Length: 114
Image 1 (tube, rainbow, N blue to C red):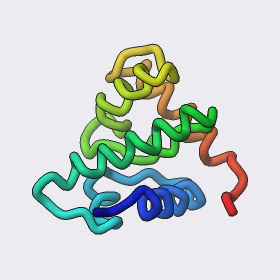
Image 2: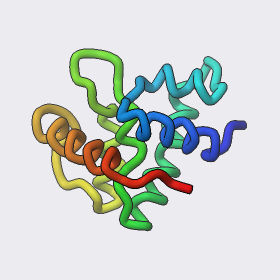
Image 3: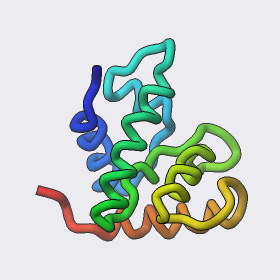
């Protein structure tokens, strides 16, 4: 079982390069394999969301986006943020996209973690 440390390492690399990546690419990067690859990644991302919310940090999980026309995280990302009290909006569309863009800009502006 992959722990969150491998995922945090990948997310930090994306952040430092000012990039996002798809769920599939990140799952592959940390060694998750089908079946259940994306569900396992989602569970790890939710753990990171909980930590970031508890510590009042920008959401590192924002760097993982869905493959398709809307380059934002899946609806479950926004639903989890709602349960954590971090986001109060819809899980798709312009409002979600605007919140997501603001969040990744906050992430990109952070100083490197040591």
